[in-house]
Amino acid sequence: MKVLNRGYIIVSPKSLFIHELTPQANTDYLVSEEPEPSIYLIEEDFWDDETVLKKYYKRIVLGELTQLETKDATLLGKIKFENIHEYFNITMGSLVFDLDERPFESITAD
Image (cartoon, helix red, strand yellow):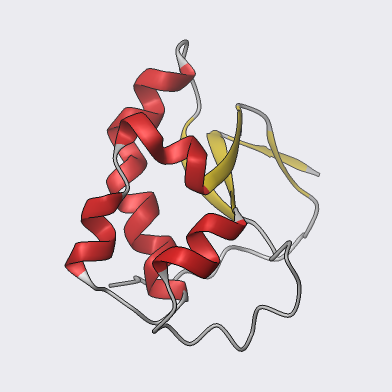
């Protein structure tokens, strides 16, 4: 087991995000009201969750919209830092363990 030098933000879309913001998106893969969360790795050491979330929230929202195969700028504009918790359940932490012995493979997402 390896400890990674990263923190994390776990993002789970709420029904408001799925049903009201993305009616034109391809949501067929969402088979339940509780879709699988996304995990965004961030810097390891941070002291204030809200400061870090404010730094990354636009990229997170864009990532969540991209997963639903929409990049509609009006949808992106509806979710602000001040109301992000209305659309997503968010959990943050600083301990990331890698249980897989294989080296990382990465691709760059748009």
